[in-house]
Length: 197
Image (cartoon, rainbow, N blue to C red; front, side, top):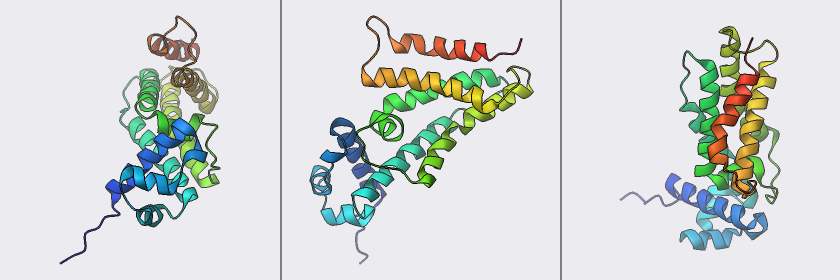
């Protein structure tokens, strides 16, 4: 009879999600592999087998956050209206962050994470802007956007999305204002500023 594999992908994801929630709520210092194993009702052997050590777990958190973010952005299909695609990518950015605030924080916002990603990991996250750059390039070719660096145009759109999402997730929205109500209008205004003509 074959041995039951207990250190599988489902357990790995369960551990990653629990660890990300712990880091999000209480910072990296609160992350204990022994406590994590107990929270998920598995052994510390399983945690060490899957991640090696705490640094390996944090690296896996970072990779999983980037992987899911890329997957979410990839659901935005290119259309014959690249400017609209830029707005839809911005909306997907926010949807990912709101659905996965703990993973979003690992990649972009959490200063309590005692983890320095490798150059390879930073490049992986850096590549998440590529669908936006591609949409801007298509928009320039279609005459929708001004000439100039597509990276700069994409970065300004990304920065607006990131800023609003960060305010929303941190609970630092100005009193009486709702980021959800202003989000798409802001994206449209930024895109409009880069329109040709």
